[in-house]
Image (cartoon, rainbow, N blue to C red; front, side, top):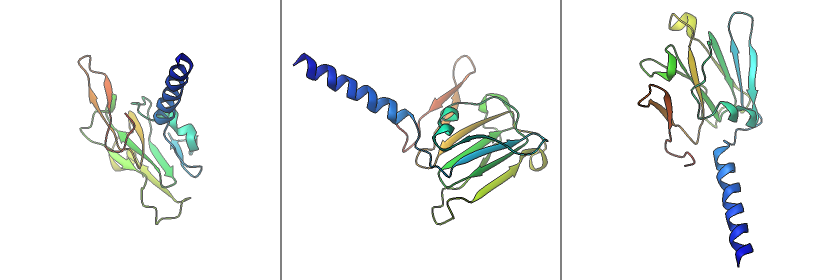
Length: 144
């Protein structure tokens, strides 16, 4: 009986961990350009390392390929949603290897200071906590 409880607990832990890792597809990739040409920062499930985080580094241009990933770029720190630009598509009728680009510096007048990565089945948000830090807020379709 104890073994069954231990195994059930282990399986639940595995399920929790797998739910926290977003299933990006092999065609999904994210690249950024700060004036020296595009450089890929992730592809496929490797994009999970940026998921659910307010990522703090300057991005002048962003390119999102695939139909399951989106990037939201913010010109202000801490993913402050005063102004933001979403890049990427969730339209599965589009070719899976298609790409969308956005030039923050040209279109908004300033590079993005922070960005978030979401997947199409999970569109979370961020809000500032009592210490003025970005806190993940699950959206519809997101694992708890």
